[in-house]
Amino acid sequence: MQGINYTRNAVLVALCLALGINTSAIAGSFSRAWVTVERSGKISKAVKRAWQDSPLFPELIAKSTEKRLGSISAHDLEKLIAKNPDSAAISNLRWRKLFRLGRANWHQDFLFLYRQTDDVELNCYKLEARYRLKQDTESDEREALRLWTHGKSQPKACDTLFSIIRKKGLITKEARLRRIDNALENGQLRLARWLAKPLDHSAKKHINAWVQARRHPAKFLTRKGSDFPQWVDMAASRLARRNPDQLLSLIKDRKIQDSVRERAILGAARTLAINLDPAASPLLKMELPSHPILNHWRVRYFIHFQKWPEVLNAVSRLSSEEQKEIEWNYWTSRSLAMTGSPDLALEGFRKVAQSNSWYGFLAADYLNIPYDLSAKSRRPANSLVSDVNRRTDVTVARLLFEEGLTVMARRQWDFVIGRLNEEEQKAAAILANRWDWHSRSAVTAHQSGLTDDYELRYPLAFEKPLRNAARRHDISLSWLSGLMRSESLFMHDIRSPAGALGLMQVMPRTGRQTAKHLNLKWRGNRTLINPSTNIRIGSYYLAKQLNQFGHPALATAAYNAGPHRVKKWIPDSTMPLDVWVASIPFTETRNYVQRVLTAQVIYEWRYNSAIRRLDSVAAPQITKKH
Image (cartoon, rainbow, N blue to C red):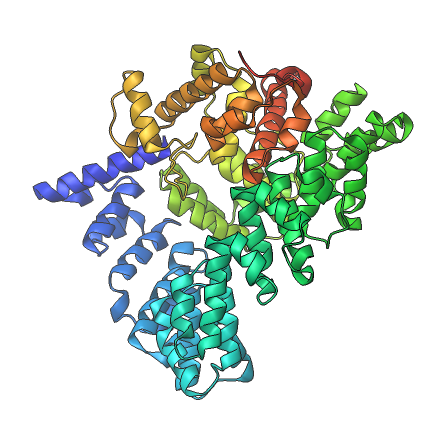
């Protein structure tokens, strides 16, 4: 409920301001003091008196400084940052100031404050400043050209830099053609046409060929493919989706010129394999050039159709490094078991089963051996945990989290983790777990190497509302917990790029409809930020998918990709669970299903101190529900 506390405090302070009440009288809570400074831009005497000795005082300084950032010199800001080295909020003022300086063309001050970053706009300002101050180098020229030749439109802030390098003659015809190709690869047709304006007719023909490859792939393949071989793969792939029979006929009848026929077959084979089209089989058996997507889907295709000798052959065509990966080791062993080589299969399964993962559990089930969920990684000494706990920057992160300022707290935590070595990061993960800061416990334990410390990585978060939801909908508590972990990593206030909100990442439209069905009061997006309400809505939707599809793997996939897609993926006849999951066409959904069901096994152990095997939490066969 951290975010709810902050919202309530913010509303209280805002109401006091509106009514003319002195907010310093209610400044006993830091979040209230922070909102007061955020509203006024100043630290009152009362707030200063109450908070100047607190580790959180720099957060108030940062907020008040942000309000008057335009009047602070670069040198004074640098001093402020140096004086408060443990505050992410004050450190971040550097970037805010840099944007202001760049837009105002204060080149010397900009370079004085600048630190290395991946931000495109800031790097454009940096290069512009160096050119203006005659400090540019050959390395700067290369970086400027790299930014210019990007396949998408860059921020408007880069226009001045691009004008400078254009006047210096750095944008040659070759550079322009390179950017046109990059733009087309990113589907930026308008940008490509704009870039071609200063060039001769050949550039326009180049672009028109790309358009034809996308819109009329059959015509392109038979008429222009040999002139523009770089677009043949794309055209064949698009035609394979629209009319695979036509494409196969063009290939069979040699209507595609020999010089690009192999490229067309490559595009056709890849797309047909992903679509699990039976016609892909002869193409996949051909000796085609190596392609990362095709190489993997060649294996998945034959797994789907359970053609085990072909699976072995397809795995052998992966790189030596890929063949060592646990996923392909499992399928090699599975194929050996199905083709009459049990001894070799057992040896491979034993290696895979050492991993507590989706494939590790599958291998252990095949061998009928126990899972070993005991932690092998070593936690740091208690003395180091105590040392990390005493750090000011760590204290700031904890206090912000306790105040419900979760976005600020996570930003501070990331700032801290960047300053710690691996052992100190492990100590930080232990501390986060003690504070019930579940998201930071899980992610920091994983990052620091405590990958099998399941107390830290799979905390029992939001247990009461999860238990209530599991009981209400008669679904597994461990499944619900594993899905919530995969959706939000326990961050109740998180929002996805698509707009999904909260612990179970519910879309607002779905949330509103479900809330109405459950007779829950709908208060807009705030409803989905509330952990209990979010879990009620998300669990109802998950139970609905289970009722529709009958298998937790299908329901999990439907929760992620949508039930309309899963309906298309259901096999006509019974299929092994591992085979069905391996042939899910969306990488994100495939990994998601594996992650959720693996987490379910671990959560069964966390909740009940007893191991429940994967083949018992999810039936080992997928069958269409009638």
